[in-house]
Length: 142
View 1 (cartoon, rainbow, N blue to C red):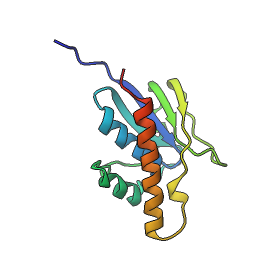
View 2 (cartoon, rainbow, N blue to C red):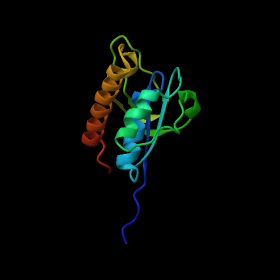
View 3 (spheres, rainbow, N blue to C red):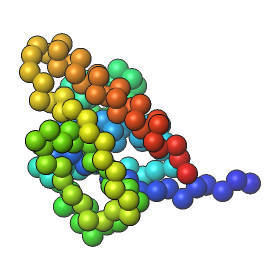
């Protein structure tokens, strides 16, 4: 009988924990739940973006129950991976001291896109798809 793998813990960070980190958390849980316990947080949490909820629903992932969390909620905890998804363009990514390994993958902040709701949705879809591809290529499950 094959034993169940021990899940690695991942904390995904961005500033507001409203879009990029929420989408990454949802995608990683959806694709690799048997390998990873996934959490997300930000240094100035707000609310989960309705656009993020909408574009995730389009690919069958429900993040409507997610809430934006402050990284202080995880103080004292350890994670196998701490992943920042900030764009780095004048954006200071949060730091969390409890990681065994640190990864950074810059994604544009879709919440910063100006325009019509359709233009905003397009930006969220593009970033969602970039995040999904990055996760597929970098988190194979160990």
